[in-house]
Image (cartoon, rainbow, N blue to C red; front, side, top):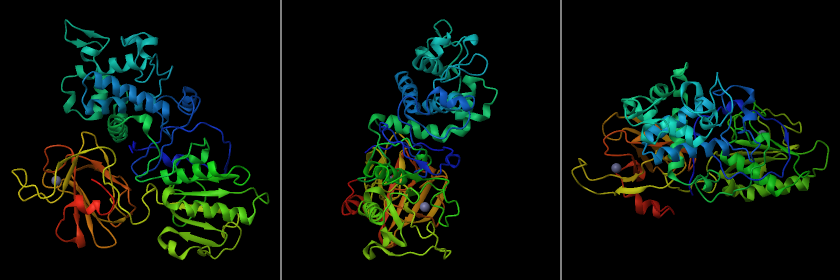
Length: 498
Ligand SMILES: [Zn+2]
Ligand SMILES: [Zn+2]
């Protein structure tokens, strides 16, 4: 399964409390995970948040809460044009970061002065007619410049106005500098904020067909259609999956609605604010019965592994994945309160891991999301290594998401600079096994030493830091924290073919 990951939404702004159902929308094909596995869920249908109308709350460049199908389609168009023009991955990143800043990746028919379209190009400064600069392909060709630009001037061997390829030295600039060199914006510092999002978008789109993108989840996860409910906003993939699958399984009025991010901010484990919980709501004093609530809660438990569920609280009882052999156990609110909400007699609380659906607790997953090639195996000896190879090298031209191979605790996050492992992370698993992830381009932003991670949880992105000849993950397995062993048969014994 291919997973597209996109970083850096404004999840905190996506507060949605008590949203009641209005089902019946078409399911979206896209879903997009940020660095914490938080889902920037697309809206379904052409009239959803990606339309220009949805941007009417502010000019291009204001914050966005979600990336939707239209935005992804525009990103894909830009990238396709760039690839046709032979633009490097870095150049594609510059283009996506630029369009994100200029138009939120929405082909808008307005802008500052006479600026229009994805890149906010101005007809009055030679970028094209109003119609042309609102044509995503034309606008993208103009942005990239070079011989493929509609503004190419053969006698001068450059486009005018110049595009990215026409800027001398652009490949050694930062993303923001390169964007500014083309755009000559009054706000040159604004591009940098989209760099990481752009890198992951480019890696995702060049790595697979976005039409195949389904819910983020490293294993055999359940997938259910999008609901269009506001409560979807800001949820992690697992929480979104719980909401969508319950909405599909149980119609109104069995379930009256859901509460997601922003609900119950005092929740001591912070699952709701972090997008890692969904509350199932019933009509006050209405049709909900204890047997129906039992049925729904048990349905969640029965599908816990495929949904990524960590624990469920319902009617003075709790079930947790880690103590599933004990079944439902008595539950009391930590405060001792016994009102209907505290005792969970008026709603079902579902906490999830975030992005681990399909793995089950304690299972193992491939540390690379997306395709790769094996460029060096364990034990290979040669000029490249001071000793024989202590891991396996999994390589891709794209900055693939790197995830925890199994649940564990983060024991090292370190940067050895241009030597050895470069940026690397080590995990220690419950049986004492260590897994090492080396040469990372970047770490998952919120990750810290001593953090507990679930199988499949994002650790960082494939890179080329340290002593390398190209972008790859160097993956090591060290049983009992001792000498490394060959990861390929070791992972195969745990159901993962590297
Ligand atoms: Zn709750
Ligand atoms: Zn290696």
